Length: 333
Ligand SMILES: Cc1cc2nc3c(=O)[nH]c(=O)nc-3n(C[C@H](O)[C@H](O)[C@H](O)COP(=O)(O)OP(=O)(O)OC[C@H]3O[C@@H](n4cnc5c(N)ncnc54)[C@H](O)[C@@H]3O)c2cc1C
Image (cartoon, rainbow, N blue to C red; front, side):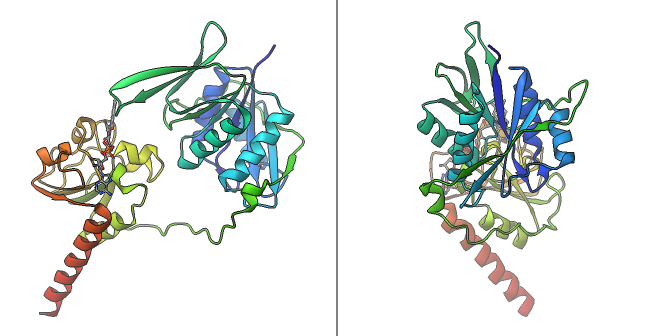
């Protein structure tokens, strides 16, 4: 029996996010039948250019999905759409990206379908028994684990850059199937999106060249706004740990460390950053290191020049406010 793999396509309007091409490349190493699931406001699915792109990276078909009665960006809505697709297209594996939303979708879907879920995988292969086996790093990358999914449906979120996107030799435009139209569940309808706004473009210096870099880690819990304000007051760039970029809180180009950008600023401010060896490898040439961390035993304090033990959501805005005050006082004198 042939195996079907579904790939949830992350897209903004007609623009396909690059993770989709990575997932499609991975999917076609696991099955011949790869379908791209396209959830949108309307039932028409991707335009010709997007279908050509999806086909070029291995989608044999596209399943357009419209969930009526709820915002298509809500995780509950996406789950409704995927459940309907799984009813129409029996698949043994669903691949998603690894954003917050993707992981929430994966978990909800697995609970509702009884599927087996692995989040944050970096590899997916099939073992001799035909099971999907997902590999992931755990315990801050100090262990590698492999998880065989034994249920009928495997739901796996894959970290960005785990697979290099490679086009197929003979590209074709993925054929769009009949749209799946489904009514939103009560969970999806219970939420109204009041506003969505793109972030304004930044005129900060480039990370590699900046004299001041403000870096956020897991401790930011995804909110980089206070760090951006501090960076702007200092005329600096904003960087991040791998945890923060993998979470999708900030772009991968902001990653500082062994596998990211190497920086050598005059001032490095790390907030909610533990100071792991892989991160330190990219910033140990910084002249002055300031660390803000609520854990007094965090490794970053071992090499910081100045350490502030405290909650970054209080410390960072206070720093910004004081710097602004001093600057205004200087300008006024
Ligand atoms: C091969 C390999 C390559 C890697 N390459 C990189 C790389 O290039 N760059 C990189 O950064 N990492 C890299 N890593 C990952 C690295 O090992 C660490 O896992 C990562 O740097 C940890 O990120 P973090 O400090 O944000 O998270 P954590 O280690 O989880 O630390 C979060 C810190 O935030 C603090 N905190 C939490 N809440 C608050 C709060 N409200 N206020 C203040 N502090 C708070 C906690 O006390 C903790 O110290 C790599 C790993 C591997 C295996």
